[in-house]
Length: 176
Image (cartoon, rainbow, N blue to C red; front, top):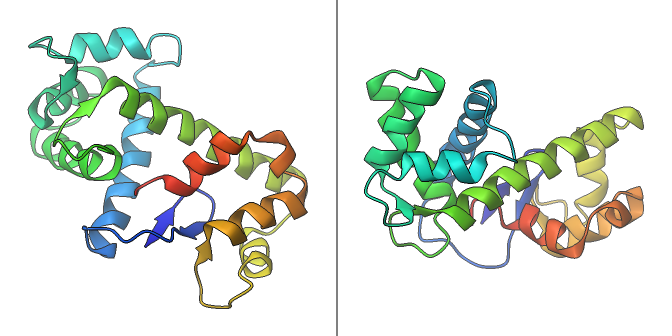
């Protein structure tokens, strides 16, 4: 499957139950939601408190309606768009496929966004063109990166050393 890690597209060896187009829309929605939450003054430090506030029934997970309501309250998103984003966000980050977002899933998406932003900044500061970097990593020439190609490419760029293996794995798994 193709995964948009915020910098490059990564092809994970595992198949996905969701069609590629839906996953791509979900990944874009995830980026949009993270940006909206940040604009709404949500930070890494208060993410847990924000999650608890959104979890109105206190079951330690967010339904689409709870998440949509939180987007309306925190980021001023209109009703229809909040529900659309909530559904897409669940598609993108619900790793245990229970139809809800738990705190760990939200925190992972938040952390992955920060790692991807850091990677983009590192590439920009180094004067690297993302398209050329991608083409250099894409050894198979098929237009997507396997996890192995992605990891090797990060190491060759000298960026892999600044990321933990867990962060690289999480970046490669975004949208899985």
